[in-house]
Length: 75
Image (cartoon, rainbow, N blue to C red):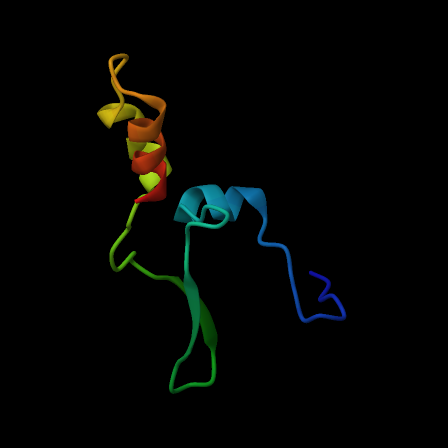
């Protein structure tokens, strides 16, 4: 596996799928064992806070005014 000038490598698709690594959603860490070997660990999400835009469709109603709808998107 080649390392880029920025120190990046591509995790093969099969590995990402088996481990459950998803772009922009998954945090990973590198762990060094006592014998000097390094491992990549997938971290468990601490608290997944969804975007208010993902939930806005649940609160919107046809009878709402434009101002009411805009206030939902502005928090």
